[in-house]
Length: 187
Image (cartoon, rainbow, N blue to C red):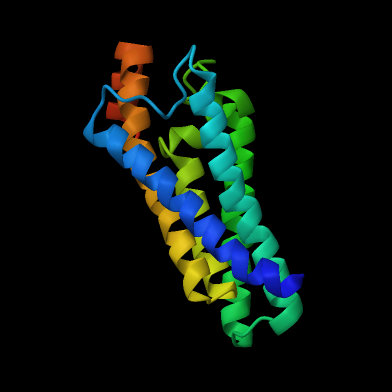
């Protein structure tokens, strides 16, 4: 069973992440196509996003646990320390920023523009912190498929920044433009 999961999960997770990347990239190129944030009145798009995203995240988690259980962590002690620090700090900050933003707001609901707390320093702290977590994950599980899926996830988040900025400008107008002038996109 473990061997089956270790061979099936890479295909499933990479395929799901590739589909997500294709959808958000298409939206970036064609603004008339709305996929993220999920358009109101189109719950299927949100469902598709959530299913694909959960396959990526849970698939990588399950694969990583099975891989470590079966093979161990194949990196040196200093690399493990760095990887664990990046992974733990990155995802802890991303999770904290998601809670500060509001869970529904983070998944496309219009519940107000957050400009305080960690959002005073960056317009995209969730994505940036996640990139650090993904880098740590790639160092911990240096398997080509896992690295390819993690890179695809990072690219999805990069494209999402530009899509969300367009959406936020439409939703919050002048308030968002002032925020953009005061706070940098990344750091």
